[in-house]
Image (cartoon, rainbow, N blue to C red; front, side):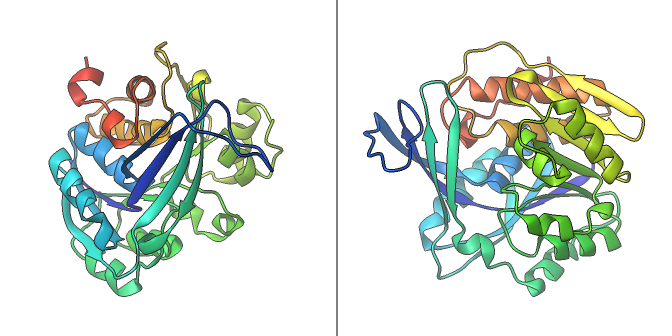
Length: 295
C-alpha cells in the first residue's frame, strides 16, 4: 500500500450536549460537557490508521495539545511531522442536540500557522503515488495541492469549513473532492436545498479531472466521475453523535481503494464505517476498527 500524509488540523473539542441548537438571543443550559481530541485532520488520520493504512500526520499544536500527539500515536499514526508553536492549539466548540445533529465553531490556533518551509520539508519525504489528504482547517492548502501535484502525489481534499477562497484553489489537480451537501452546494454555486443529484452533476461537470464524493447523512453517499455514478447506503443504527462521520467516511474510502476494492465496494465500506461512528459518542474515539468494517 502507498503511504498517506494527512496534512491537517488538530483540535481540542469542547462538546456540549443540548436539547436543541442555541438560537439568536437565547441562553441555553446544556446537559453535559466533554473535552476530547478532534480536528478534521486528526480524525481523518485516526480513521485511515484504524483502517490499516500507513499514515503520517503533519500539523501544528500549542503546548496545550501534546495529548493529541499521544492519542494519534496510540492509533498507529506516525506523528514525526507535528510541530509545536507558542500559540494555543486549535479549539472547536461543538453543540450536539438530542437527535445527534451538530454545529461547530472553530478557533484555528496553530492550525493556521503552517509555513511554506514546513510544507516543503515534509513533502520531500513523499513521492509519486503517495496520498495527500487535506481539509480547509489549515492555511496554505492551495500551496500544498500545487507542491504535492508536482511530486505526483494523489490528492484528496475535503474543503470544510467551506470558504469562497476554495474556488481559487487549483482543484483541477485534486483527485478526490469530498463534500457534504452544504459544502457541495456552495462549491457548485447552488442553493443549499438543491437535490443531491443536481449538486453532484454540477460538480462533476465543473471539475472533470476530479472524482466527486458527496456525503448526504442518512441518504448515504454519492459518487461521480465523468460518466460514472455510484451510491452508498448507510447502515441503520441509532444516531448519537455525527461529529466525525465525514472524516470517518473519507478515511475508510481511501483505505478501501488502497485495499483494491472498486468504487461501489469502497462506498459501501465507507458508509458502514461512518454509520458505526455516528452510533457512538465523540469524534476520534467513535471511529471503528478495520475488523468492524471489513467483514
